[in-house]
Image (cartoon, rainbow, N blue to C red; front, side, top):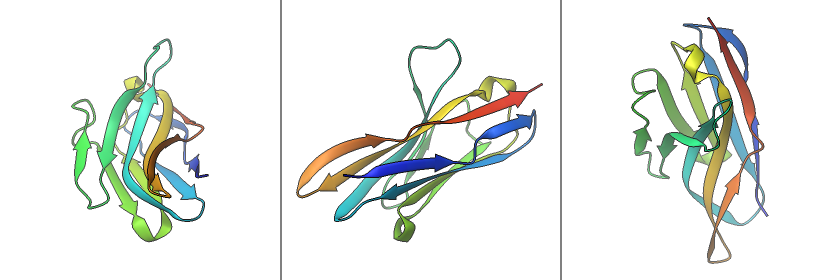
Length: 120
């Protein structure tokens, strides 16, 4: 069993910054891709914000390119999302997701979510 624990959300003014963290805990697993998703108020679906592979390759949604940076510390099984120049439309619950190999099988885990609110 793998658990993902997110932290770093909060309330910030427009043009401000926040850094989200997501730490994976458990034993005997290997993490492949780690992603950040978000679900905005009133939206039914989560959208992919950023993704990073175990080798460090990254991918971003067009709406956050140049403002957000995803990174990971493989030794700590932790992924980060540095969010700069925040806009009110970035307000959402942010979730991390990890694709994990455990005992030769693939699993997908989600964090509990952390609220990010950007005021204008």
